[in-house]
Image 1 (cartoon, helix red, strand yellow):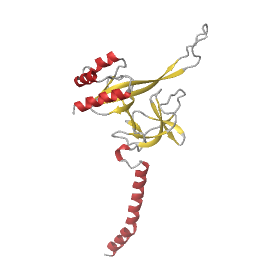
Image 2 (cartoon, rainbow, N blue to C red):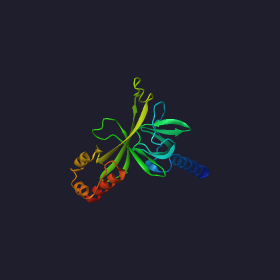
Image 3 (spheres, rainbow, N blue to C red):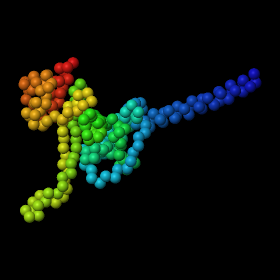
Image 4 (spheres, rainbow, N blue to C red):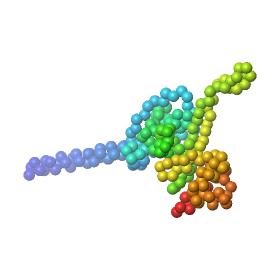
Length: 230
């Protein structure tokens, strides 16, 4: 009986402290992971940015929520999206680091809710890359932002052209159906032929004028396709 009372006394003395310590640990774990369970990054491997040639979608650091996957949680960080190298730079204590594409499923700019998914579609030979989501549904409208380096084209004899290398920004529209993406042609005839395989699109194109180089026009077309299949 004496031993039982001694054990009961010790348990009463230390158990509240254990609970307090445990809740402090849990609280800090949640706080560090931004309290958003599956969509917050707990840990992922970063490496310092060493690229010299970069071209950013956003010139200034912007707050974004990095989306993880079923294995890795996400996190809110300051980011710059390098469209030349198709990499996401994150600011860790004023040091630019690279967030590996194989871990994240994308990111969302906080405030604007601009969402970019990081995927490697079937029949895509460029590796895992980013697409901006413009319209989401059975059919999704995506934009692939990229940049290419153009070599100097200076002609000494004619004294024309540029002596320095230039970076040219490019945008391409894609239609995503299931896990496949298809580039939407920019020229009218080719684009109409592309959408001709979708029966509902034929009617829309007959009744509406569509500029296939304009985001809003394509967005309305894709919205119509999604509404028609409901």
